[in-house]
Structures are given as C-alpha cells and as structure tokens.
Image (cartoon, rainbow, N blue to C red; front, side):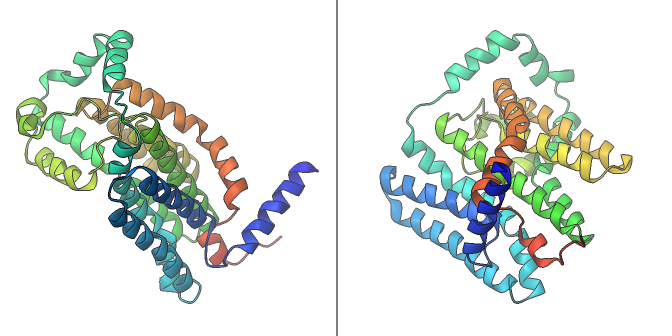
Length: 311
C-alpha cells in the first residue's frame, strides 16, 4: 500500500510541473542549479558560468514548449539532453577545481601499483604498442560518444518511445552521477602531456585526429574517478543486451564496450581503480534510477508524445 501511495505521490508531483518539462529535463535542471550554486559559492568569476548555465536551462524550456506544439520540436526536445550533458561536463571542469582543491592522483596511482602491479605495464605496453592497435583503441574510446546516440535513434525510429525514455534517463543519470564523483574525487588520471603524445602513445593519423577531438570535447580534465567511460559503456551494454537481443547487435556492442574499457588504460587516460569505481557505479545505477524516478517522476518526452498503450 505504501509503495502504491508513493507512486501516486510521484505522479501528482510530476503533474504539477510544467507539462512540457519531462522527468529527464527536471533532473538535468536540478544539476544545472547545483552547478550554479557551486559557481556562486566557490568560483571567482561566476558570471560567465551562470550565463552559460542560464542558456542551458532556457534551452530545455524552449525545446519543451516547442515539442508540445510540433513533431520536429518533439524530436529536438527528446534528443537535447545528449549534447547538453556533454556541455555540462565541460562547464563543470573549472567548478570542480575551484570547489575542491584536493587531487587524488597520487593516491590512485599508488593503489594501481599496489593492487595491479605488473598488469599496468603489460596493459599499456600490449604487443609493443603497434600503431594499428593504438588506432583501434582510439576509435573504440571515441565510439563512447556515438553508440548511446545510435541506440536512442534506433528506439525512436521504431516507435519504442517508452524504452527510449527509460534508456535516455539511465544514460543521462549515469553521467550526472559520475560528475558528482568528479567533485568528490578530483583526478586527472595518468595523462600524457600533449608534447609527448606521439612519442609515448604512438598511433597513426587516426589516433592523432581522435586526440584532437578529445582536446575539444573533453575540456574538463578532472574527470578520471570514477571512469565515466566505464560506467556508461557498461550501462549501455546492459541496456542494449536487453533492448536489442539479436546477435548482430549484441556481438558488436560487446566488442565495442570491451574496446572502450581497454582503451581507457591503454591510452593513459585512467587508472585501473577508476575503472573499478566506474564498474561499481554501473552496477548501482538501476537502484539509483529508481530513487531518481521517485524525485523527478516517471515517463519522458517519448512516452508523453506517444499514445498510451492499450490496457
């Protein structure tokens, strides 16, 4: 009985919110408000950050209002959280540094040596680091940005709107939870200085282009613990395994995730303990999502747009 009452309370709370704000919008706006508070309290020049955050918040309101009136707007509204969460990641970078002066790299580097010993040089020096392997690892690492987007597109195109909403919610929630971890444990990871990348990391033209992309896409460098790449890739593997049961999808998805996790250490972007933390986070995300749904409500853009399933 209590669970039923709680569910009705959540539905009533969601109903009181503006009709064009979905649960995923409310969750992201709450995180934007958190960043705004950090900017005001800890950042020496908060105005540019606050203006950026205001633009992000306004984009949800505008997309939601447009989506309530137009099919094209509905599509924009549904997919808007994916690029915005990357923007939030980069906006958070300087705020993390301002809010928490601690740096956990010495601790995690020592833990790596203690716990994993000879695995580290073997992993980073696998097969003598041939250029083709570094290129493959670079492709795998950057595929993290595109695979979730492709999964969401596939569900939307097939009219599987409720599943789209659930997938989008857990993907965004996973990233936001990992961002909280960055505030708690600011860590840069065992990154190689740009001037030494070619000498130390190797690879060919593909690796060079991926490194150029990452310098633009990942401005925030206090993002090692927990490994968001590991957490998100394990989450979208678990979700994809359930949503796309064909072997023609499952096998490439599994290989891609193995490649992503391998690349995080091979390319000297994460400690192994970062991966362990990311895996633990991924395992806890279903429970976290249940709690977040209690706060921000059920459903989403797709389910709200689609006709209700027949009883």
